[in-house]
Image 1: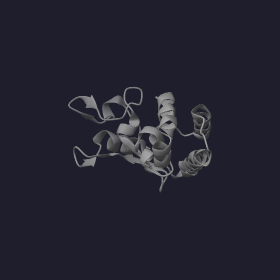
Image 2: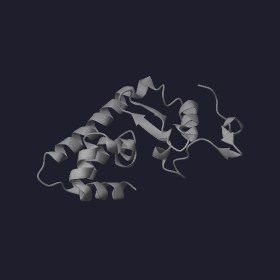
Image 3: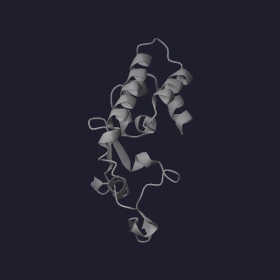
Amino acid sequence: MRRVTRSSLPASNGLPLLVDPTAVNPWDFLDFNPDTYNFVARFDLATNAPSLHGAKTVELLQLDRREALEAGYRKTHNRILTAVERALQQDTIDPDSLYDQLSEADDHGLLGWYLYGTGQNLSPFCELRAKHPEVWAACVAVLT
């Protein structure tokens, strides 16, 4: 991996192009691909292209070539899916308990992608959001 210095960081009009998770929601610029278990730039409908901030972040940090981490992301993905699937099998869902289970399952920081990134459109998350909007809202509120 190449050495990164402040002067080598990509910028546009003097503004950095890397996603700074302390200043913005990274899921506005990045997506998680559950088929490859890697990160990609989120598609920006306004520009009809991948997010420039996301693309530069993925490129510089090599987020799309982290084969060594794939197994960990896969396990985290599966644990989070299982927690939601189990919750959906219950008659009532305790939002605090579900959030605790999701947080415990998330050792790779993916939960935000499922709750307010594009992952919320995947099954079983879209079912949870549609069938139990109050549980969904409570989980999102705790995360944010």
